Image (tube, rainbow over all chains, first blue to last red; front, side, top):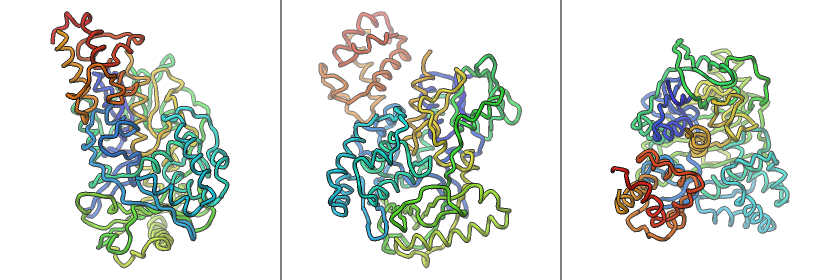
Amino acid sequence: MYDTIIIGAGMSGLAAGIRLAHFDQRVCILERHSAIGGLNSFYRLGRRNYDVGLHAVTNYAPKGTRRGPLARLLRQLRFAWDEFSLSPQVGSEIAFPGVRLRFSNDFGLFESEVVRHFPRQKDNFRRLVAELCDYDQLGRAGTGCSAREAVAQHIDDPLLVEMIFCPLLFYGGAREHDMEFGQFSIMFRSIFLEGLARPLVGVRLILKKLVQKFKALGGELRLRAGVERISVSNGSVDKVILDNGTELECRRVLSSAGWRETMRLCDEVNRPDEHPAGRLSFVESISILDAQPRVLGHDRTMVFYNDSDKFHYGKPDELADARSGVICSPNNFAYGQPLAEGVMRITALADYDRWAALDRQSYQLAKLRWYDRMVASAVRFVPDFRSAVVETDMFTPITIRRYTGHENGAVYGLPQKRYDGRTHLKNLYICGTDQGLVGIIGAIISGISIANRHLLEG
Amino acid sequence: MTADEIKLAIIDILSDIAPDEDISDLKEDVAFRDQLELDSMDFLDIVMELRKRYRIQIPEEEYTELASMSSTVKYLEPRMRDVKQ
């Protein structure tokens, strides 16, 4: 009999597992795949390591910082700051036609860029920042208030509005065009006020640390252990049944598989669809270069680009949307030593259904075609790196679906979050993307806070 | 446990929770909240660590007794007198 069974060995599940195992619970994490990480995973191809998932860790805070999400999670999980080996970004920008706003982990740069390009918005921008600094830090408020409406109350230049929304939607927008103001505040703080960082060896380092700690505390991790169903009797979970027929008894279940995915696992009568699935997915091209991007004239960490004054964040009318995207160069963080090879990752919005409808051959062809289109679009905003490319790969909404199990390959999950983590069953809870917090730090905090709130009692 | 042993136990818990902090500099009478910027999640952890390590149950309405080192030791002393290290 386990005290808690956790479904999914991603950031949130592992973090929750550490909390519970630390306080002497008997915990088992079940992971369907042979690799951990979920949305933030990695793979090896042609002797190279590739990251799937997020480009960077947001919510960066330098060593010695005692406040904010990063400091909080380090204390909760008993990590020293150095263990995550975070190197800060060197500097990023938001690029629209004719205007580029640079930002770094020093908020003063972003503020001065806004004032320089939008002098009339100076006070408006400061009022907006003041308002969102006061907003509930854990994002539990869930007021449902539109961020577009809230921002429009302060800023009346539509171009600046689009430029602020562009990186925030790309890095956490679960619904089209807009987001909840609470979510917006969290995203704004995590990217602009706190900032971006990355470990030299990639996000896998953080996963490795989490797994090591979980196991050292006596936690059990089962890979290739997909959950077939959650058995329910008298309004509560009594056991979890694996794909191979194994039955595991437990007092409680914490699922990071997603809200709808978790509901589908419950073996009672079908529940009505309270929450529609997310529709937004992404495609990403990865280019390996024979030179460091800096040598080719590219010294930005991220470039969020859009080729008109209006930013369209929605499900595209074709396989992907090449009008806008995120260019990430993992080389351009302030590491102590350079990465072995140059890398450019370009991410754009994509339509899961169109990718899913392709047969095997058309799928391969579409990957090649869209690699070319996305790179051609991106090099309008960064130096043309195409002559330096030695290897390429693409991941699509199909890949995301495979790694995360999210319906529609919806990276950021449900548009409507479940902030309290509760379900219709008294001993089944959810954490992770659909609970409400996104990003690497957000996911870890999600696991910690749901474990603390519901699973550490008694 | 004596008052000194309790103090060492608390220092051990705090250095576990905040490994980057130099706990040896801790001032006895200044609140942990002000010195280490501990939040409510961290206070809950001190309580839970005491329960885990020494089987000491602290009721929620008495969490405020754990504000600083001196108040914590004073509060715990009678409760941990019979606890063996």
